[in-house]
Length: 363
Ligand SMILES: Cc1ncc(COP(=O)(O)O)c(C=O)c1O
Image (cartoon, helix red, strand yellow):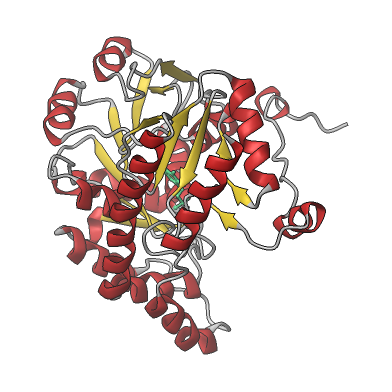
């Protein structure tokens, strides 16, 4: 018998929920708002789709393994050089390269409770122990608490800025002070999956790709504001010394031709990006007004989603189910360690209104 290592046995298998068409049929839903995965409900950036069309004829060729054009375009965007950039099948893939290239033996990943659930899963899949510091009362990263937990086994610290699912943000001053206090042999990973949204919301939000520290890697994605989550493409930014080992473990032909083309196209789609970001900033304000009126305890967010604290897991669960029966799909958060909370993605204006209307009904 082939033995499965203990850490893989302990991983929970991914259990997909019921497909949306089945739920629609079961509840006889005429209209839906899909607000559970922080996707861009305006769809994919049109210039990304155009680029895919143009690239598709070359599908018989292997992709450029060095991803030179895309890395060059990203380098230009963030004011760095090609050697500072790595791309992968989504930023979760770049996170995997980091686990693969840098963690050995007893090395630990230090992060927070109540952050992006995939981080816990991928660390476990690589047999990397995760040390978790509780979130602050305001559902933000407790940077002081994290600093105190850095020990001889800490290889890297993971911060999600803004944090998924709470939406809380680390300011530029806080981030710089934090990095300066982290020993240089400990890597700081700053996940900026919601960068484009956060940047539009406050000037205090840091662009960590512009910070030049020898132990800093920034993760970004095309899955959110650029609307190509299904294509799978994301990137990492760091010093050439930090990026080179990641290039060694990257699967040779990842990402695909089409994904590289889509990202190159997406980067030129300023109009789509502006429309998306403006809609998000408006949508957040719209949700805040409506939630305040309903007396809901929401957490101010710097992403394309808002988290609401319902105090008990039972209340959150009941609300999730009641909304689903009315065609509004939101996210429950037990896997994130926040079973008493619900996260709602900002949709199109029509979806947001529909969501508020149904929320009023079920409350
Ligand atoms: C904080 C954070 N990082 C990364 C991702 C995933 O990005 P990608 O689709 O590029 O793997 C998400 C998606 O929800 C996220 O919330």
